[in-house]
Length: 210
Image 1 (cartoon, one colour):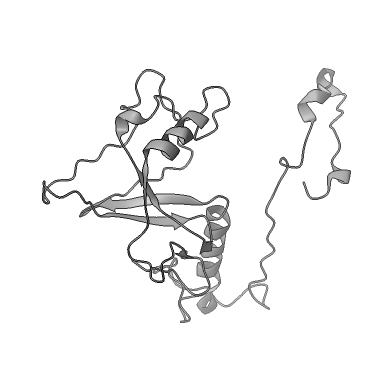
Image 2 (image 1 turned 90 degrees about the vertical axis):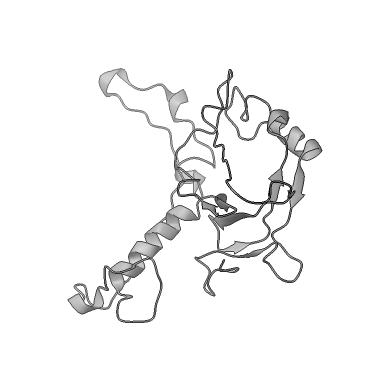
């Protein structure tokens, strides 16, 4: 996509050819993220330089932080920063394990969205209290400009959150409901009056850490 002059249409002659309209490309297709990793001056590094299997996702400056551990984190980083996302970690003392599931379709059934949606019942707590503690984390980036929680009534949402034809999420109807009927809450554990921070991939580490 960064060198469109070299992108040409396929014109095969075998098996009866191929319709040219199926190989029309624009600047948002044929994209790739290329990395050349020079891990060591040695083509076959010493075994003790490969690192440890113990906690390879934790970056350290010790002996355990070898070539394999660093490259595992680099590969995960390349996949994680494709697109920013938010993951709800818990409500009150109830912690979640699978809030973000890769490749899950965000469309809701046209008849009922309760079957696919995630409903959480929070046990205990003060039933008269009007506040609830929600923790979340942000991924898909290194620096976080801003993050916030948007909340509102479940019944105000449309049955289909995505566009019914294109599948784009959220739909304009959903956005209009969120903009007009929902409320916004800023994180309470970020100092300085900002809602930004750093992800786990930042050179200075995650902030806030919890």
